[in-house]
Image (cartoon, rainbow, N blue to C red; front, side):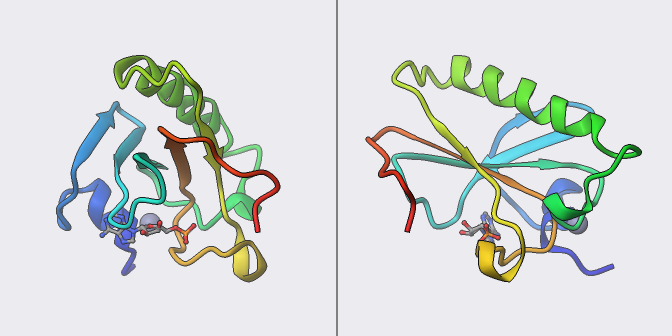
Length: 112
Ligand code: AMP
Ligand code: ZN
């Protein structure tokens, strides 16, 4: 299967690593929307948030454990936002489940 984020997770496509453990990989977004913007992914392919089920959902806890660890390592004391875009209307452009972690400026709410 030809998947950009699977290729990033297995090192075929280069990325700037921010965090890694056995099931999760985080890397710098190539087009950052905030002073800190990383993408957190499960290493195992899941299409999107709509494809989360009882069999694969344990990795979602791992992703949020990783996010809290990243926040400590990167000293994001003022807070951060985690977003997952799902499907066309959600603005998803890469078909491998991923979470944007944004920080370093005051983020508008609600999003556009
Ligand atoms: P989304 O639009 O929610 O699917 O998010 C995809 C994100 O992946 C965008 O923020 C892109 O800037 C980012 N992106 C695409 N290709 C790469 C890449 N090769 N390395 C790092 N980030 C990427
Ligand atoms: Zn994938």
